[in-house]
Image (tube, helix red, strand yellow):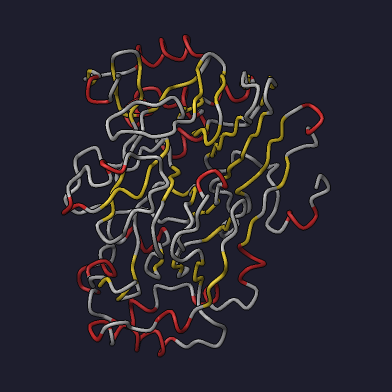
Length: 422
């Protein structure tokens, strides 16, 4: 059995290795599974990771409840291993991080525009999968994160049906604050941090989560994600601030509220409250401005495949990431053209993508290699990638996410209401 640890790590430049691999595969890079633990959460057991490996990093590090895709962003975990959060490219019997490959071959992988502007792959996606809810928290915006040498983090959610055969303990997400909530009320919650449940959820509203739908959430907006397994395209950062002190009887330390805030502000309650985007949090039409349902790219059902937008819309006037879900019927071959590079994960079935096999795994050991994750270069995406479902019984389904301003033709928020292909 091939495992990640059995592969030799490439030291030095990866340029020749990347060029050889792109030539062999038709512009694609195979990626190894990238597991991330969280010490303050309980795994939901729907990532297809073997149950014996849920605590592969050690009980002290917490359970593995996330898998990151095409990531060049390190996980901001205390006590993390050096490469935690970084995806590895698999090339024959060798491996190297996607981060290093982009540093060595940036324009060839992610395209000249994104490389010239960011000098890195500035986005990533993940599955996060928990038995219960996550604390009510927000992610800092670019200005706030810069105070501690980080980047801001807008994000999006899609709930793939293939990973949600069960909803676990709380398939509802709290978003924002009820209209009419005051800053004084939120400050009082912070004052009550060590008294048990600080009551911040009393100021918020929960929305029932539905597989096959999603949300787009900008920075500085409070949210307490529920217990559906979630595909989450987002900006390449791991900043956050937890505003809830107790979740399902588990204490949330103050350090997780202030970890990405300047040290001289760690006890300044008014400053901490002012980090929230107040207008966005108390928006009376919050769902209208953030809720997503899939929108088909075109009416291709008669051709045996459907490509759908699953993440679209803008954050503060910018398209920072988008995502699509491609479903290919048994025995069908199709060519899909896209405007830019993307990370891809297979969530159902098996088949081919150019000259690489795709196979959705049933169960994965911690160090095991898979054939479900791929990074596609900009040139290959623009030329058109051939997807083939050789199965006679099961659809091939893949999710792929894109970088900033790649898809000017993506729908606007609320487009699902006008979907002419339903």
